[in-house]
Amino acid sequence: REELRQLVGKNLARLSQLDGLDAAAYAANVLPAVLEQVVNCKEPVAQQYLMEGLIQAFPDDFHIPTLAELLAACAQLQPAVDLKQIVVSLIERLATFAAQAAQ
Image (cartoon, rainbow, N blue to C red; front, side, top):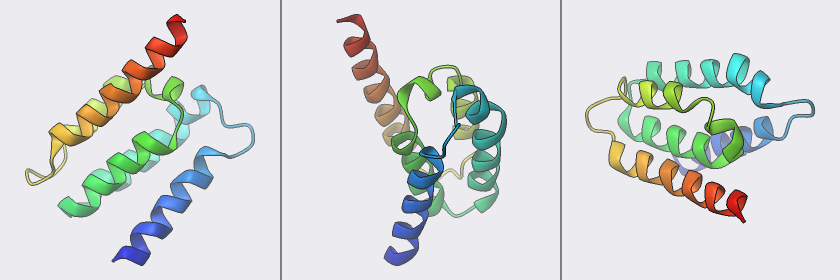
């Protein structure tokens, strides 16, 4: 399970570093495909990890315009998924991004 976790994490990181990937391509192509896989997974531990990985792998400025989609996907996750942890992680990243942008 740990090896699978590392493999998925590395793939998310590589996906986030693709040449030419911008916020528009992320919103139109990458995010919908990844969220579809996360929601269809139906395994709470995997859903938790995938959502956290998605939030960490992609730049903050990609998450701001797609916040509604991310939160809508959270509503579709299994009841055993710790939504609080996912949302807190996302909000902390966005708050740090906003604070740095304001300086």
